[in-house]
Length: 308
Image (cartoon, rainbow, N blue to C red; front, side, top):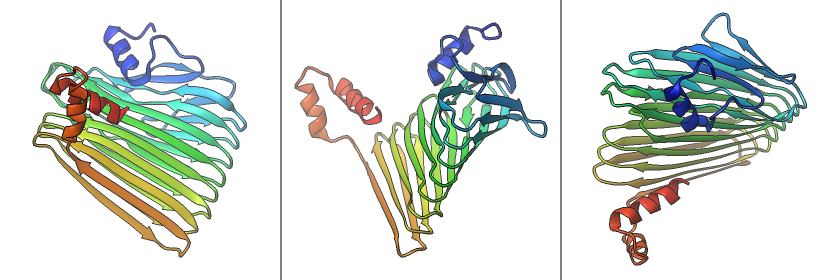
């Protein structure tokens, strides 16, 4: 890690668990520029020529390779925009670890907008993991606005795990999907906000193919004066199945809004939405306090379990 200092290492550890250079293909971006890259026989990474970003090409029938593409920002006042396109070959099966960490010790806002587009060929499978994290002692904001677009051809599937637990002052997170026949798109989201932070999540999924399906799960905790919004739009355009659920814990003066929208454009579309927002139940806290925990410790234990 010749181009990476101690602050960078801590950010990489937080967002992707990296303490040394990973096995497999990777591309590490710092302050708007690529600083480390490795390709393999099955995974090629190419710098875009027209806009900032990379193209990641995975050969067909590639099995169980890891691809790491973390982004770190340590420059206050930087607004970084990157376009990353993933082309996943037929019957490939890979794990992609992304995410962004921002360290801001100064007064100007630092922002990263990452636009990730996934194109899966027939039978391809992807597990996509992203974590967003902010830190620093400055009063400049840490802003993250990820956009994820998923295009699934027949028989393919993508599982997305998205986590934002600490330090992000403002985020608008958009996830869009267009699904073909016999496809599956699973999204699991975990968010925690505090102070005056703001987080908005938007899901927009088009179930275009017969027997396509999606399962969207959002779990969040809003504390202090923070504000969260959850918007889910799912369109059943063929014989299909969807299940979306939003579960939120609210504390202090926080506000949470859940806006479900399901549209059936086919008589065989089966679309379900669930939403629950509320405070921590008093009996849960009391039960843990009988085991020796303080009220504050009991509350934190419940939150940790909820977001696990």
